[in-house]
Length: 116
Length: 112
Image (cartoon, rainbow over all chains, first blue to last red; front, side, top):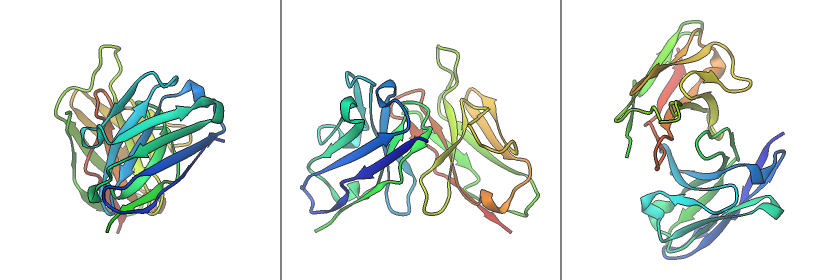
């Protein structure tokens, strides 16, 4: 059974940093693109970033370019999102998702709150 | 960016009755590989989204056959043939033909 478990969320002040992690099991992690999607409180879904199977290609939504970095460790079956220079508008639940185009499996999400 | 527009934004349906949600994209979602990159997701309260339909009309594993997707180019529809209580939630269409993948605003389905 495919499982994706996010961690690392929390409360951070504007301008601060957080590193989200996603531990994967139940499928061959290195075979898939991986994606981060976020959802602000009471709002819709927003794609954040995706990374190729071997990490050689990465893409970001404009609003996080230069501040967020997606990465992966295939040996550890883990996906990461390094978030720097956080803004109030980055407050959301962040989901780890399998796939680069078809988002077939989602984690439960980890909440990030950016507030002073 | 390819913008996705869903209608209606909410609907209330009697159990056993059909429901339909429209999704329109600002550009064609047909890619040069012959696939149309249109997806439907359902997000139930307190849960992550779940994939219902991929590439316009293909039901994902375990999705009941009362759910069906249709359309082409820029106009797409999700239909539920007979709504059940467990279908309550917010339905999103999404395009992933181009970066950034964008979701529609969501359609909230409630039971009468």
